[in-house]
Length: 308
Image (cartoon, rainbow, N blue to C red; front, side):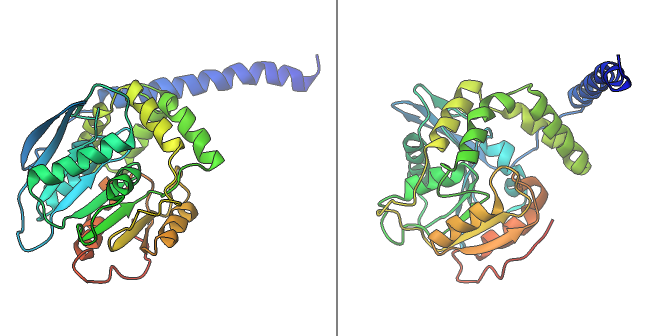
């Protein structure tokens, strides 16, 4: 046996053993981390539907500014996505759990049509007039579906964050096909992602640890990912966006920043770039609130900028 083969036979088991040891250490660190549900203002409301129910958090705020309707993304819930905004914004808020997520029940497969219906039902139930829509990631396709054929002037504005009008690119379709498995509860990828976030934001790590316990069932992850893989709004002739600011995540490893910019250009949206990753809300909520406050108020959100 030559030296290179002997080295491989010895080093490969050692490398595998070291990787396993590091993984188990990460699992223990995540599992032992203290969790704390944030104390959030507002009341939780529920609307009965023919396919389940829609839950949303309602918080009354400044009556002189448009209310915000917050729509979360894939694998998240209303509170687990938006808790930093809920805790600090002074605006009136309607924060929606999409069908099958969080407190919302769903008795049939997830579709964007049902999710859009949930958004419209919440707006009607809360009696909101010309609110600003705020959508993160998968929340973008939900909101675009809700906006199809809507009356002009119904919404004061839209903030689209780390999202796209089309999710049919081959690389993205492959990512979404694997996502329900590699990002399911307890998966090594999700555990290491959580561990990285805990280390990145130690001041709110206990809330981040709680947020990761709020993920929907794998069935919902599969159904939502399947809907995303087919989503393409570029040819929708009945889709007109209100005044829109597109917040691009400059370090996004899920949805390429160039892809996000291309969607913004398609709809003539104003673009603001933040130097953050895909799940931007916790780490950039102050910047996001500043951007949101300008949408629908006639104030320019400003030139593209970077902020961490």
